Length: 278
Image 1 (cartoon, rainbow, N blue to C red):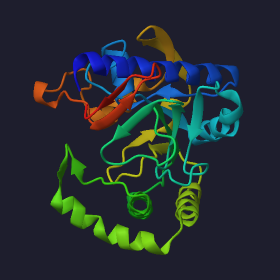
Image 2 (cartoon, rainbow, N blue to C red):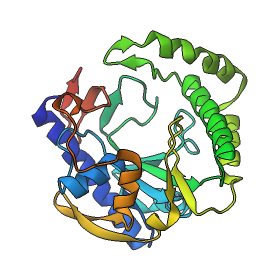
Image 3 (tube, helix red, strand yellow):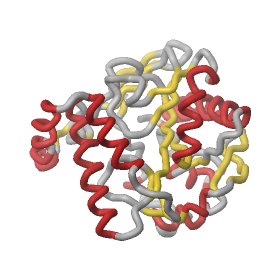
């Protein structure tokens, strides 16, 4: 994606983040910038220059509070999308999307709403020992990938090319998805996640095999920091959270790794302008 177009994408996403911040402030819901967005806030005081999305996190209790009030509280230009309220959506976290826009990735998108979005990740209690963690990851990944297949996502497509090994690996999930409904997979996934008792450690519920674990105390409070032209929440344990996953997060990656990763194939801005094969 060209630099000028990417910047317009970032600014469109920034408006969604501002709306989330407004709603969370009004309803006393604690959120925090996360992942690359959190690195951007600390290292660049805004977006990582080549980043093409915004990620925020919430501890599960806060996530459920937000989910309960989002429909009524978000402005008329926005929707809250989860696998609970959209039977064509296949991800274990929610998105706040901007209506009347389009942001379609080559690996797949909802058949319904597919506008610009901010990812909202719940952080769930982690089992206390490694054996239980491995079991939970195995169950979560199986269900998450089966649901992706049910909704015709294509995780094996990378920059227009098929990763044959990954394609073969997903074949079993594709077969299994034929025997379970969307509702049943979601119910089973949420049941095994919620069955973990209260814990001192949490993980970010993405649905991937590679799971990082964080001390819950790192997210027990938030503080405001500059991100672009606004002030947004970051966790009190920002340094610890980022170090756990990224190591020396203040060091810039090699130039050949500085790329947007969503392989977007179609964009329509809120102004009405459209771009294909970007």
